[in-house]
Length: 250
Image 1 (cartoon, rainbow, N blue to C red):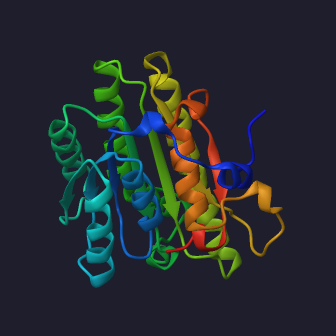
Image 2: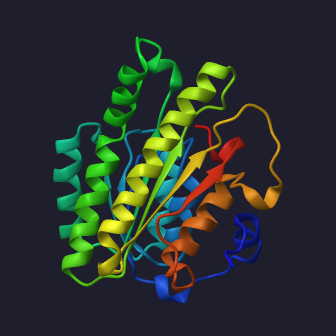
């Protein structure tokens, strides 16, 4: 039986098998991904980080990770476009001769989608926002498959908490798109033992789920990412975990 997310977080320890793992994390900012990057660094991983931000908080993060990670490469250029994502992913894989773990942090502001005049327009815009993560997932999974790497890809959608029914509907559409991407890629790469999972915010207003049912904090998110990348998570693919609170916002 699958352990609850809160159970994973409570029981999280060190995963020795992750030492030296080649990890790519995209979309890191001071408001998202800090605990996740620190967690992989503390495991002695080799990191390629895409951080489209320069700030004192990011400087502090990199100073800490430089002392714990086995190696680190940092890129500040944005990869919003699909082709940029392809080139960046290919370059990232070359640093260490491949990738074992990929985490894509996808930020979506529902307010930016208010210009859509139809449901079809809205779906197209959301798919466009997912293009970079989708291309990164495809390139990384392909490289893992070619090198017989039993790798892990985790796509994490971050959206501000819904304040209206319309925003909840947008989040629901985004979640559906991410679910389709996750399950499609998971099926595609299953024979190569490449695991594709995701975390998406809840698509309803208000609270109602028990702690064991949701990723609720940045440390929870980091614990889940480590678990899925470890030997303990080798049987899990095509899953979409739910997030709320600080774990779903940015």
